[in-house]
Length: 140
Image (tube, rainbow, N blue to C red; front, side, top):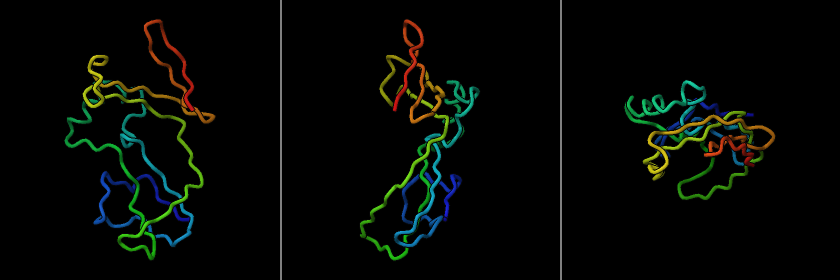
C-alpha cells in the first residue's frame, strides 16, 4: 500500500504544487497528517506562552498544514472526486491552543494558552482549570 508521510506537507491548497503521490481510481492508500502547529508544541517546554509567541516572531507563522497534494490518475480539471475514509487513527497526545486575539478571548486570556491532552480509548482527556480547581473532562 502506498503511503504519504507527515513530512510531505504544504500550507496552501495550490494546483501548481507537484503531487507527492499518484494513485489509481479506487486505490487504497495511507495518509499521515500533522497537527495544526506542525508538531512544534508537544512538550511542557514548548507550550509556554513565551514559546508559542516566539513561533510568530521567527518570520511567517505556518499553521494548519495539509498533506499532499495527491494526484488521482485520470482525474481532470472540473471533475468531482468522491473519497472514502476507511479508518482514522489519532495520536495519543494532542493540545488545546487559544490565541486571545484570534478567538476574541482577550477578556479571559492575556497571552496564548496551550495545554497538552491525552487521547485514549476514543476520548480526549482534559483537565479544565476553573475557579474551584481542576475539572476532569472526557470528550469523545
